[in-house]
Length: 223
Image (cartoon, rainbow, N blue to C red; front, side):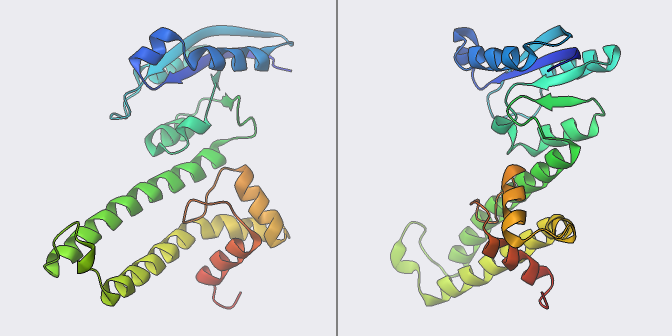
C-alpha cells in the first residue's frame, strides 16, 4: 500500500506515440494500480519523448528537481524499457532521490548500478567487436561483405576475442556473484537472483547454475 508524496515519470519513444497515448496510457494505469489505496499524493507527472539518439532527459531532470524540493519519491512506470541505457541508470543511482519502479518494485541503487555496468559493457563490446572485425578484414585485404574471405584463422581470432570478452565480463559481474556466494547460496539460487535483478549473461541470455560456475572459474580458477 503506497504512502507519501510521489512524482510520476513516463517515457515514450516517439512524438507520435506521445500524442496518441500509445504506451503512455498503459504506464499511467500501472502507476494508478500501484498507488491504489493508502495515503498518498501525486505531486506531478512528467512524460519524456525520446528519439533514442540522445541521452539528455529534460523531463527527468524536472521530475528529479521536484522530488528534491518536496521530498517526494520518483515513481517510474517502466524501468525495464530503460535497463539498457547506462546514462539514465547512473543518473538515477547518483542523484540521491528515492525512487520506486512499478514494474521492478525491488529495484534499488545497487540494482540500477549493476544494470548500468551491464548496459555500458554491452555497448563497449558491440563497438569493439564491430571495429575489430572491420580492421582485421581490412588488414587481410578482405573485401567486406565477401564470405569467401573468411578462413580458419578468422574463426580462431574470433574465438580468442570471445574468450577475452567473457573474461572481461566475468571481472565485472564477478564481485556480485562472489557476494551472493558468500551468502551461502547455491549456483542455481545465485542464477535466479541475478535473473531477478535483470542481469544478463555475457551473451545476453538467462543465467543457469553452469553459467554462474563459469564466472567463478574465470575469476578464480581454483573454484
